[in-house]
Image (tube, rainbow, N blue to C red; front, top):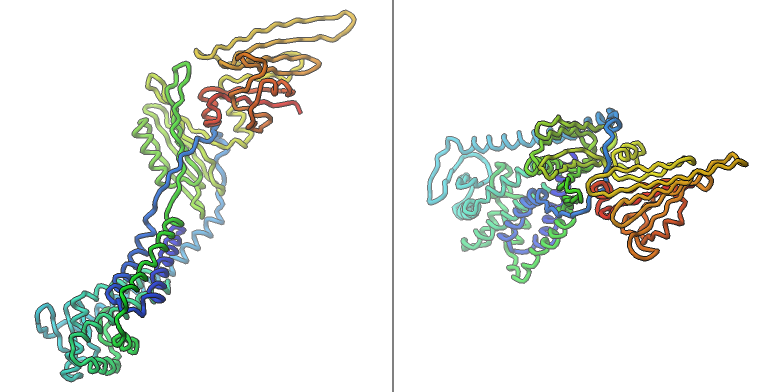
Length: 547
């Protein structure tokens, strides 16, 4: 329904634009034929342009993601709000349907009345016209190539004027304009602009016919008197071009008006910049897409990692695009179902099934009265061609999800807060040269009951940085980071985060030595990039200090 309301708003705005341009700039000009095409183009523009959307893609770096916590995704739906929204939609749709059906029935009745007038009457064929001389007291009218009149009501001169007028309507197929305007009134009956627009179209058609007919008739005044006489006939057949129209005074004024100067044609171009502004403001959709990440590990085990992000405002078209890419590129089956959205078109419920070959289907079910969390489909490709598929979320503020993420991290160095021992945890692979040398000296004094434990653990976590962990029972844990490059103080290439704050300035090894470090975590390779995006390409050092 929201999409329908947006379309109605855009269409109404475009109709108002063309109508105002005609009413204030073109209505009094004698460019009758040009006005005809201008008004018709306004109708079709109001229908077509809202559907033309230009897509602008903005490439962004992948957002940090962590393992999804399935147990906390499902939420209870707010049934009361859903029912209220459904009831409002039903009421609006019912009102529209009533008006639409009423006008559609009226349209059908008009066709039936027209058929009654034409059926069974003697038709006189002359050139491309079919003349019907009826004995009914109705105003003369034309319907495509039919011209209907009652010759007993007019003199020969008056009848000549009437026929010339109706021939113009028939030759230029003005009936099509009438039908189009009626159809628009049926479809958009609730919009007052469309009724004013229809009136402008019919009035301009009469200006065209009057102007053409007056040029073919020698006595212009006699034609004007005929116009005045025909106003006494109030019985008109709808959906036709009938000779009688209201606003006879305006028709006579336009008949006697001098031709407009050609330089006034600039008025037709007024709508062009307005249409361009409409497109720029409302018809350009900006879509942020993440670049496909190609991450090469030193071990050579992982060839690439592709990230397909699903956001709370992802459209059905974007979900379909992800499905096609997963199938085409990775031969992974992806199905999104049970899709529900709120009034802002944000996803509130979504079920995703993923199947990679013969592997067991992975399923995620989200829902609730809140919008879903952003998450990504991660496809890891090894050098041997095997693929692994996972689902991860980007909500780093959830404490439980942080715990789950830490359990799955590689290359993490933690220093324990235990005053009697220091624990260094590492995961090694073929491209990581991790060395841990521990020298423990215990000195026990006979005069005291204090035991001092000094531990020196040297861990080479990557090719450029060495972490030295010293734990003392009295002084607590301190961590020294030194660069393997020459010199006592060097800038670190890694992303440094201290107590949850990203340090944007250049950080040196000496800077970190000033910190009273409680624990440290180091991410590198694929984990650093998947978790922290482009910023983590050189590795990430996360430090928690003693408060």
